[in-house]
Amino acid sequence: MSIFWFITTLLLLHSCTPGVGMDHGIVNGKKSIPHSRPYMVYIYDKQTHKTCGGFLIREDFVMTAAHCKQDNLMVYLGVDDTEDLPKGIPVLAIPHPDFANMKGYDDIMLLKLNKSATLNKNVKTIGLPKKGEAIPSNCMAMGWGWQEYTHMSPSSVLKEANLTLIQNCATPHTICTEGGTGPAQGDSGGPLICGNVPHGIVSYNIVNKSTGVYITMYTKISHYYQWIHDTMRGSL
Image 1 (cartoon, rainbow, N blue to C red):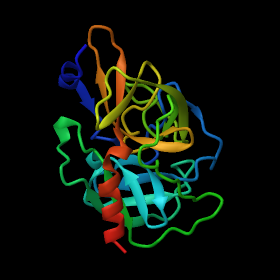
Image 2: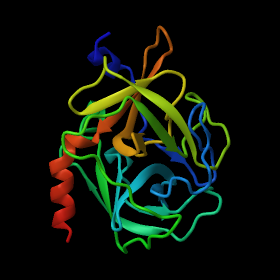
Image 3: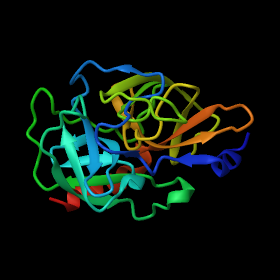
Image 4: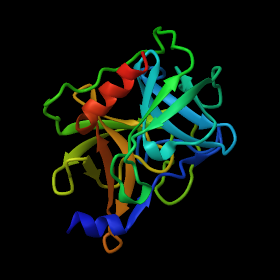
């Protein structure tokens, strides 16, 4: 089946999840050990109440999806349960300049924290893949998104699931997984961790209406290595 056919049926996750303390989790995921993913970041817009995930890649930078951009974003570090949030940090959103929502490409954004994070046992950075590094096929996604693809189900804690990459829908910009387990609405911007390294950013779901199989597309981080480097260097 052509990737172009799939894209015509994509369900973009740009709407994220409404509200703090609403419905959070990974479809068929398990509860993460509290604070075992200290690089995970909860992203919330105080005006629209939309949320996304992200991950801390430097004391002053969070990586997430470009479609998560809102005008009043705050990031929350060291979060396990979204019903008990620490003080939020305002950010400057820097989406990739070529991002176009309905094309599904260049869905990557950096958030510059207005105050550098204080690193501790619950708040840590995670390193990005090296240029040319091979991507292991066994991966993990995590986030505070819906636990069902089609409707909300309550859980405010971070959840995660093991996933396997598939090759028949990958592009130079993206990598993908498929099946009834994985990210759903509200998990946008979270990392796809493969071999303890974030190789992807949760971007959108595609569904084959005849089979009901969901494919999740992730922005391939290594494709944007130069933009990431230049953007972060320019902020110094």
